[in-house]
Length: 233
Image (cartoon, rainbow, N blue to C red; front, top):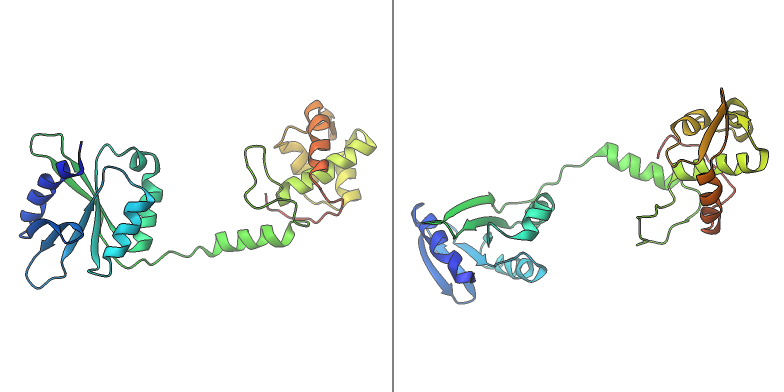
């Protein structure tokens, strides 16, 4: 497939809406004009990448109606559709998907250009700042690979409990709560999110084999012995 294969289906689509359409006008792949309205510019590409996004942003100096036109089989769009649409919306760009392989081709407008007005989430912001304020120290390097896990407030609290059990051995959850002044100790032990704890009898917990293996690794990462309570994970 060539980028020019996308042109005729798009041209027919725009002409059906009473646009006059011409290809390769100066640096624009497609230019469509209708009466006194702002012109429409469409940049045709076989895939979505930073280059075409930057090119489309550059066209915004010509008109507010700038679209990126791609084939329907674009793999990037299939993998990251929601994120791509959000990005283009933020940039004020539109997105058109073109099926050129069918008899006459079909065109679907996924996004029209327009001013971006993000929805603010106070709850998410409070959760973000809460994690920041309650986290002990700065145990993570920015950009760290997250597959193994990063140090969160919840993990710090679980580690504080694990360190206690490592020293004291099997202990009642109520005693852990009292000694560490950790109101959520019972929940953390019961939920056992990381597989670090075993219940050895009713209300009594000890480190699991996995806990004994993993706790030293997290300690090497620089876990602080200081501890603060929080309900955030």
